[in-house]
Length: 156
Image (cartoon, rainbow, N blue to C red; front, side, top):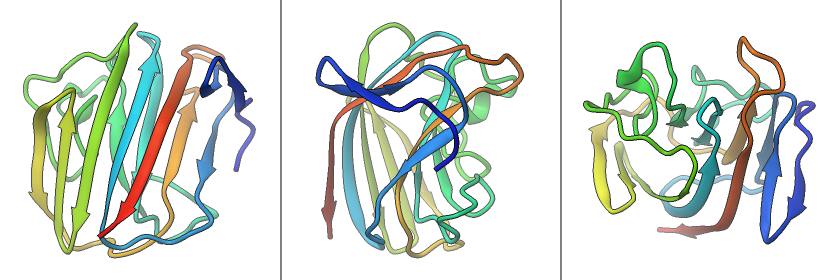
């Protein structure tokens, strides 16, 4: 969805231009995701879960597990769930492979970034929906590469 230039290279799916999502055709309620990702320092990306509208994905109708080291408000940057669960201090992801382990079960959301839990929150706004991997331009066009590999989803 969108105009991001998603492609496969060197065992990963990546994008470095445009705004867009790779969206699962299946809907998920309770599940675990394990994903490895690599991001440039100025990358704005994330893993969107339980999206209530798969055609208009946003942090308003999904939970966004953020990948954004330079987010102006860092409490919702990398490791956080935007507008739901803050992370202080914000960990940095740029320039290396990282791992997200995300669990959504009932109203509980748990995020583990590189083996360290950054979020354990409860929120019942979104119960079920597809999962989307994001690449976003933001203010500066065509900045920031995002790569994902070994994305595994396990329904609970």
